[in-house]
Image 1 (cartoon, rainbow, N blue to C red):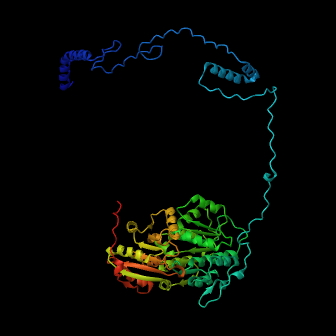
Image 2: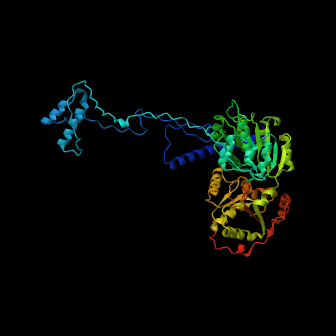
Image 3: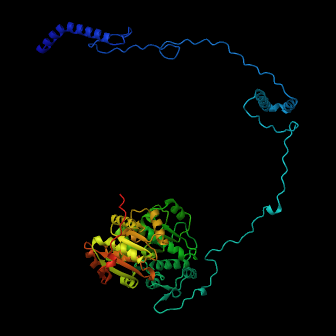
Length: 578
């Protein structure tokens, strides 16, 4: 045994009596201080004990309730008998009424007797009006009242059988109604040998001569050749490929066509452009019987899916994302596509849609078994590489931008400072009073700030950008088309989807960094031969972009100083909203 343990054992034995006395004293003092004394059934526990004993629980009395004393129940005396109703004295009339009740009508008799007692006692309830009741033999049913005969003029007469309404393509039409005199340098639609139903639709639309781009494209596409065309929007290229598709479908009808198997496919980069192509297709198909479906994101997915699954589709116009979704799920089957059109290929290249377009093209027949038509505002090397991969010996049609823009659009460049831009824009809108004007900016925040400033100074305007929802975008374009809104501020993302006729002015509030965007911006005005104005603001921060635009156009732009009346001071405006 070690020395330390011996010392501990000695000191522990000496201190043990003292420790026990101290413990007893502490327990006694704590018992005096506590309000509740120690109960006899609880065992005392000392700090030296190993385990604290559990207190014994008292059993609850069997009487229920709690552990407290039970209250004695009051003795209940005998119940008082219910007071008998006093005999009711009836009059002769009341006795006759009581005698009318049959044995099975005992409830009604009791209710009647109760009402009589209330009348005798002067009750507040009003007696119900008793209807005179004739005694009826037991078991006999109440006779039904006889119905009056219906007048002859109101008698039901079956509607006469009407002949079914003839479809648009079956209604007779005389082709001699559509006669256009030949004119030098212009191509008539009569010269293209189109199907009579298609000619009727063209006649209903009021078209007489083909546009320059249509005159160059249609002779090749009507023969089934692949085509790569450089054309600005608003030149009639949409009608060119639609006429080729419709004429091919009418001249080569199918004996049997499955649901969701289109014969022609048109791919567009934006929803607005797809909707515009769909509207143009409906106009050209009003007398052909062909069906067009437009697919794009932001709209009811299930509705578009049902339309594909339940109908025979001839033409599908779609954006790449929604079309690839339906094609992956095999809702739309592209294995029977005969003609494919890719519109604004350069824009798809810029927006990153080319991988999706490739996946879509892989689901169509081989390029030798289909006709492919491609359009772009610029036929760059990247676009032509795509064309060579997707087409077979494509014929290239190159319409230079200046051939369209210079003849129909008056292009001006005003040299101003950045602080003078809004002042100049305000006076242009005020003095020229344009029918419709589109103002382009490079960024979304610039468009938001500009639209707020125009609203503050009394020019009602709307803004279009990539952040605007599809529903709101459609509403804004409809208001702009209807003339409810005359000033529209837009970015380049939304600019290509604006297809509205009658735009008199296009203002480049900021010079675009990409020269191709300039071509697309001014293409919003001067559409289909109409005249328009393009005004560009060149400030000290953006003027260096002009040489690239002039190189693309192949011409020198007119740079002018704005007139003094165009730089008049702005009127006072309310403070900006915070």
